[in-house]
Amino acid sequence: MPTVEPDPRQRNANVIALANNKGGAGKSTITANLAGALADRGHKVLVLDIDLSGDLRVAFGIDNHELNDEGTSLVDAILDPSAPLPVIVEGIRPGIDWIPGGMQIWHLVQAQIREDFPIATRFAEVLAEISGDYDYVLLDCPPSNPPLQEMVLAATRWLMVPARPDPTNWAGLQKIGPVVRHVRQWYNPHLAWLGVVIFGMPAGASRITRITLDYLGAASGTVPVLNSTIRYQSAAALGGQVNGRLAAELAADRKGETTAVIKALRARKTPAVVSDADRIPASIDKLAADYSRLADEVISRTTAAPAKKRGATK
Ligand SMILES: Nc1ncnc2c1ncn2[C@@H]1O[C@H](COP(=O)(O)OP(=O)(O)OP(=O)(O)O)[C@@H](O)[C@H]1O
Ligand SMILES: [Mg+2]
Image (cartoon, rainbow, N blue to C red; front, side):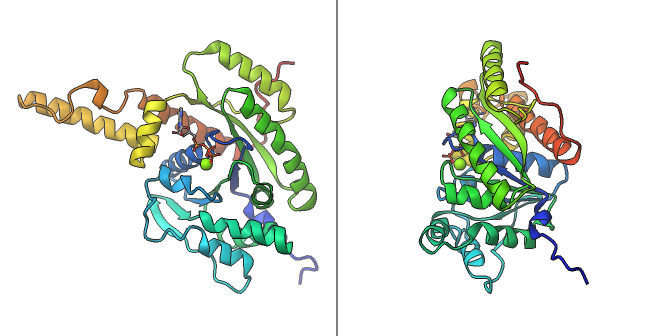
């Protein structure tokens, strides 16, 4: 009979949180596309939307899903230990399950502030009941909400910080440092930096890349900067959001378009899509490849010894 209860948080060893105090840094977009790329590699992935906005479900095109409860079952499971585990919506994509979030998440903040309810400890316990069924669990955080950030990080093994190449995003990164230290001290000594991922990097902009890496190298201290970056691709991003398609799915859609155009031209018919302006941009392939590379790097960094820090100037 063990004398010490196993620490339930250690069972959350496969949990990755995407957080940055700055809004619009790419947290939800990367969560969805990284989940897709990990699932494409045969991994079983669970995604949780810990944001009131519910943006994650927009990225997956499941905003009107019949099982979208705006986070009710997740909130109930955390606040009431006798409640069942949260509803898991299976198969929103092959290999990807989803626990919805949304407006109900606000009740967690209220419980913490008004009643001093230990949402951080409880969330880690609830997630530990579920996380073992998956290869990776991805948590999409709200931009700035200290109680929720603390709660998420208490149940997290790996913290990934998306940051755009602009100084306001870097300030958001610096603000999360104290939260990490606090969580490590009080809740979760296993919390580790997976790294900063640069989101919305202009293609071929070597000067911006250098300035960004220099800044991050100096500002992030011991935080690694990932080798993979996500390129700036606003047209494809908008198309993805409007249609609820991941980058890799849009890349496959574009291939389908091309085949249809060629077929129509060979049959001397007018293709459904003729003009390049009406087509999914060709650069979608490169954006999808960015997420593929990110998935590979995530897999190698979460399964191997920590890689060397990139971006350090000295
Ligand atoms: N590759 C890309 N290049 C440029 N913009 C992009 C790209 N991918 C997504 N976007 C846009 O970036 C914006 C912010 O993305 P996202 O919602 O993922 O950020 P977030 O950090 O989750 O924001 P919030 O803090 O509000 O939750 C969205 O409007 C999206 O359309
Ligand atoms: Mg978001």
